[in-house]
Image 1 (tube, one colour):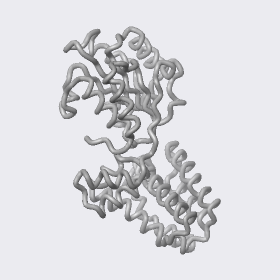
Image 2: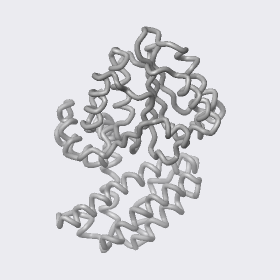
Image 3: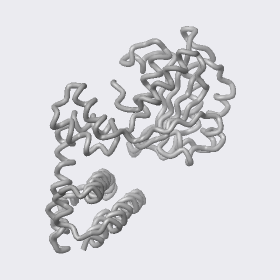
Image 4: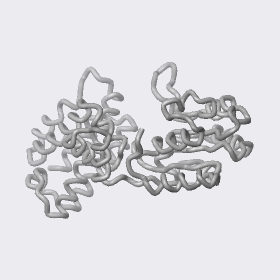
Length: 312
């Protein structure tokens, strides 16, 4: 997969590989779908001298992420000690081909104390030819003992124009690439998904249209405008998970509104909304708080109604 953005980071690793001066462990920090995993896989394949399409079957590569609970089918909340120990079991002590070994640990901040200590022991015993890529959204949540062993690499959001240009280079229609770049909020992975999945793209555009229609309406019409977000047949948990994505879309939308307002650009929502810039900031902050409430299984309908009240 092509890397979109992050030229400074890729150049940094290209130079390290050329000089054979890689560190043992790197912690990639950034938003979901910003490109952390893409970069880690790209350089893992380069280190192992294998086509990236064959990376997952290479004996010197291991990708570790949260497992699903066998009973519920949902992802477990933590990475277990058994999973951490499985790194050693999978890779052994030496490379199969006498070169590097590469390990990617996704959501590494979900290592608990036991699994973190097991990983720390593996890091202490591993030689210089084993490279670890730990992917996290927030490095402050990573165990301090693990964090101290890593070189921290921060992944910034990628500019809309860069994402759009690279999507077009990948063969996407210009109009779709432009819309996907705008709705991705600086995350190339999201933009690629939007281009590949017309249904997801339509969902995002639908949320923009929803807000354009309800922003200046009385409260009862706002409530009616979000009715289709709730399905009585869905479990509350599933509805909450779905609304997490909706709130993410609303956040992107209102950030765009703020930027347009600051630049005195025309915007359908600005022309209808009576909110000041400070109130828009408060609204976005409300979205974040609402996502936290949904994660605690608070009634989804109450959460959304509280947001709509703040628009009145």
